[in-house]
Length: 237
Ligand SMILES: C[S@@+](CC[C@H](N)C(=O)[O-])C[C@H]1O[C@@H](n2cnc3c(N)ncnc32)[C@H](O)[C@@H]1O
Image (cartoon, rainbow, N blue to C red; front, side, top):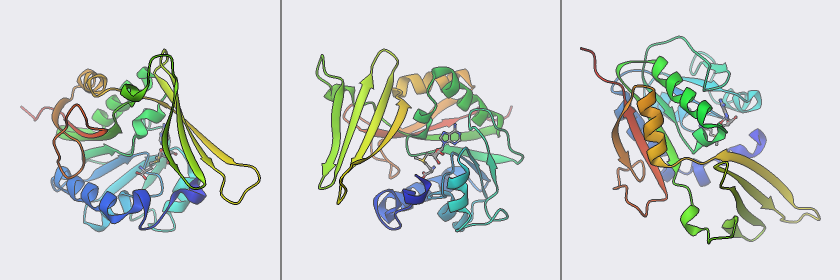
């Protein structure tokens, strides 16, 4: 996946996706340093560092880090290999952020709570933890059905299958352009409602400072498909 992850200028790498996220994270860092959980190939970390925010990363996948290293060396963006729910890194951070639905990659509630606790451990008083996450698509699922096509175009079908009892879904990315056999990439996730996320934040000592539907600050409503939530530790004193 690391090999095909980057799509410079397109998809999640399009300037209209990246630039508003970077601008908002610069503002939320408030002049301090940032730690990205699951930094990947540096889609956000590289432009955020270029904007003047010192960025450190934690990442589980060494192939993803190798891609990042083609863009930024260890001195520019230090990265520790490890699990974002448990790994500690040195440094003083005013901001921890976890974008692109990646908290869902932790497959149990306990691990997701640990992730919030780990964010809190890296922050001082008034520090912020920003989470970007989709709203579960369950309203589109009729009773008795457990699968949904979430995207389709020539040569590609995206299908989500749900295990509602476990609060899991598997996204199947099926590509069949010019191939005899389709290529299928499956990603298992634990989906989370905003209210459950708020409770996890509370357990770790955070309060909800802001929630918007996107990085530009659009109002979050009952129709929003995703959210950017800003959690904050109490200020000192
Ligand atoms: C969708 S990518 C997001 C990467 C990057 N944050 C971005 O916005 O492009 C998800 C990343 O999370 C990493 N990941 C998954 N589970 C992780 C964990 N428990 N701890 C650290 N990284 C993890 C994957 O290796 C992958 O690089």
